[in-house]
Length: 85
Image (cartoon, rainbow, N blue to C red; front, side, top):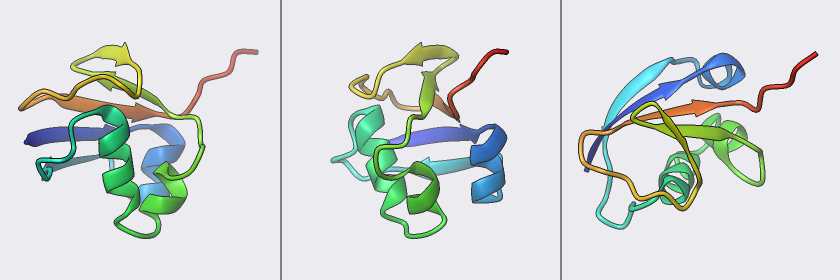
């Protein structure tokens, strides 16, 4: 499946890139699967996206949960949690 990935704020800084076009393997079906797939690339991917870190995600500009199914050609954006003050 082809996806457009976008990374914001500290995630962008940690990965050293703001966007990427990828083609995922067939077993990547959900946001959680995608995150695991990316984390398995090794560091810095594992450090930034892996484990139990809280990361928000949007699919085609709508905030979604980790169990959301991916769709061909989607834009997937990753955000660190936002706090107010």
